[in-house]
Length: 119
Image (tube, rainbow, N blue to C red; front, side, top):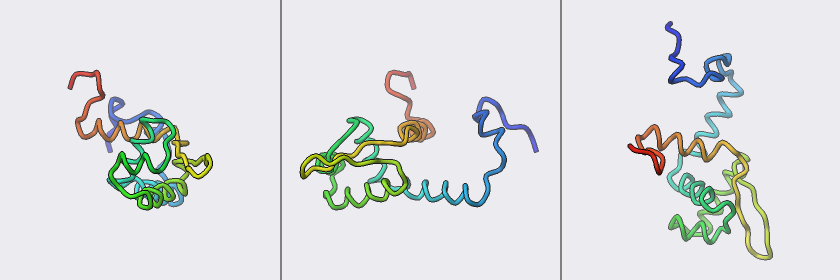
């Protein structure tokens, strides 16, 4: 087996022991939660605004508030987002600092270069 290219593999990942069953199960569960067009758009909408009420997210992504609420609950279960109540309104914010980078990395993998950088 050849040594991974240091240009392609993050050093921390290359030095980590092979992920074990509990970790791989958690990782697969996380990717299942993120493997949704609507959830990715919800996360991007939240990342753009910082903290957003459910109704505004629903309008932004073109889904019903109930649908968005259901998706947000799944992401809250994975500790990706958190809520804050203000009267009758529920606001959501990202609590996992890796989410924005993960979405940006996914776009990079697809060849969508960051804004402001030549493609």
